[in-house]
Amino acid sequence: MQLKSEIEYPKKPIKCVLTFDGEESADAPAADLVFTHGAGGTLDSVAIAHFVEGFASAGSAILCFQGNMNLQSRVKMFKAVLESTETAESVACVGGRSMGARAAIMAASTGISHYVLVSYPLHTDSQVRDEILLGLPSTAKVIFVSGERDSMCDISRLDAVRRRMQCQSWRVVVEGADHGMTVKPKAATKSVGIKTGVVVAEWLQGKGLDNDREGRIRWNEESNQAEWTEWSSGTQDDAWF
Image (cartoon, rainbow, N blue to C red; front, side):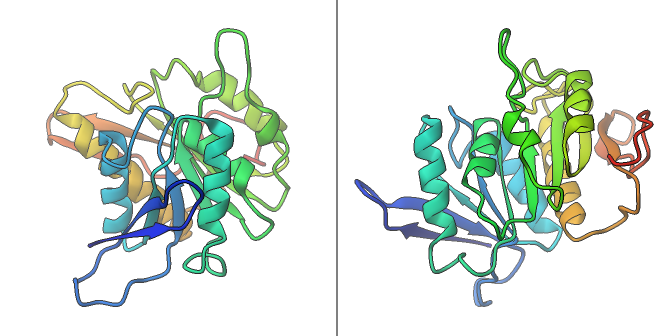
């Protein structure tokens, strides 16, 4: 079920979509996650649509909003959404994909405890965007969802940053996926994208975590579906992950 709304904002309202698993006649639940797209994307982008579908199918509600390509402007819009009457007192989790993930961290208030960072753009050829990650408080909980072939988030470099972060973090690697969460064969992209949303929703619900911090999503050609490995200790030896 999707409910569209607008939040008043200078120049033009912010378009929002609340997605949840329910009937049209059901009361709209409070959002469990406020989320936004990447710099060049929209709410209709394939990567967003698949993630949202999976997240809602796991029994959680997600509020997505449409922004523009400017980071500072997106941060201001994120703050406006968080301060709106619909979300001000209920949301403890924010996130986004790519540039939207950076905006989520920068916009978060003291009431935010969980961060969902999908395709976080950790580095360019000459820059590492780790400062805001290292500035997160020790009480925060962060989940990274990264493509194995993401040219903007090398997994080994991400792990190095995670070791330096003050807070706990979890890492989901999508095998064969690029920055846009596209995998081969093309038909697998939707199934894999939906699975990322399911895994994040269950993480937020606290399912199956214990002390394990790493997991992988892969496409199984034989069963023709995406598979989740469940959480494990991975190859890292730092238990704080």
